[in-house]
Image (spheres, rainbow, N blue to C red):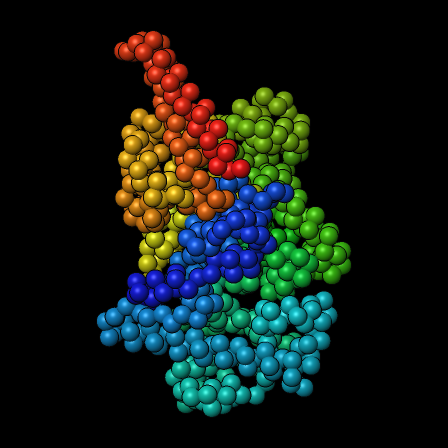
Length: 628
């Protein structure tokens, strides 16, 4: 992954037009000065609480707390890491990126990789053109039409066709300046065992590009068109770019939709994925077979915190679901199972039942524990006591991770009903079996990787604020899936007054500096607002600068305050009123402390409170006159 210079990042940041960028996803209206407002793209709302400051190039939602700069906006809505967002924005605003000076060997490797990626992109274009223009590809077009797939969506997924001749792609590649070695290294050609002659790897096949989340083609999955061709499905041979076990078909098309929905639908085959997209379920990806690897589960976690498994409802598909659960169990990834009818797949259902019927099935996706319990009960021998004991033993690992909850109680009731036994007895037996399950599982379970962020359905974005660092993440490293947003913490009246005061200091910097110097730490009721006070005394002109990379809390608050400062046209008199409100709240806290047994005179504090209150009333009158 390339490392770009800080100067390149600064040029991209300067080039970002926040109204243009955010306006491509949100209908914005000017709300005064450099402030714009609209409906938040990160949560459902009916009245606008989402604001953009075009001058400071920041956004903040006062409803859900999301906020940040152009880089974080792209990361969250497009499902990209920081480097991906940098490249996306550089391309959008036509800013050339400069790579940090590299070791010659590393530079050569990077240039080699970029050359292979260019070759694969050209091959994709070649296959697409062949599918839609060549007479030889007519059977392929007919097959795709029979599957009910529209040309527009097939073009979006860049589905193509490899001609039957042995050297068509080789000749096209050579004509474009690529060598046989390039074609072989990219997995597009192979050699004969005897004389080592090179020839096209893919012939007479429908070609499905396998791209990374940024849309860079790394390899292909190819379906044979004739019954005489073996194997039916052929993939690019694994190489420095392509590893099948890491791929998710359609992730580049689905990533933004999955991030916004907070969920990813997983199907098995290529046409299943395209059919789901055609039916309006744009967050679908494919695992290209029934096996699911740890790398694919990690990739799914990078798209959204919830995974809906819509795999073929046969034995192999069910086993794939169980493998997926074993890999994801300790990654906090929320797996659910879409209840497909036995013997069907998503593409067949869309064609036979229609889009709404499949969407209803997706909406009815059940928790994995429920699926597992129903599956074990369905295959159990319930005619004997021995068979019932075996079922209880098999259900132990399913119940082991379940906390005491309504779901656990309902599943226990379901099992008891099927076993025709008292529910209390079944609950006790399941608890005993679950207690034995971890030890029994640890001897056979594969090692597990680190956790992937998870959250409630429909949530797939980090809580408010910019990601770590001024540009949203450590350079060159994927940030992984943003954690789902937590509901914003309720802010007390005192905190609202304090934040309004700080925002007004930003909006009126000349008077703001003086006001910040007059107030002390005890004017503020929370440690965070005290830290904000000290930060703004130094960074009032650029509130989001100078924040430690790991201080997301302060970063969120500064983004919020900067956006609030751009709204409306505040007056000096309003700032004075808010300062007096702070002092009044400070006196009230002091009086409460004395009443609780602290030191001080309530009489003196009450007299001081009266003077400040009178000054506040006069200040409010002045502020109203100034506004008039």
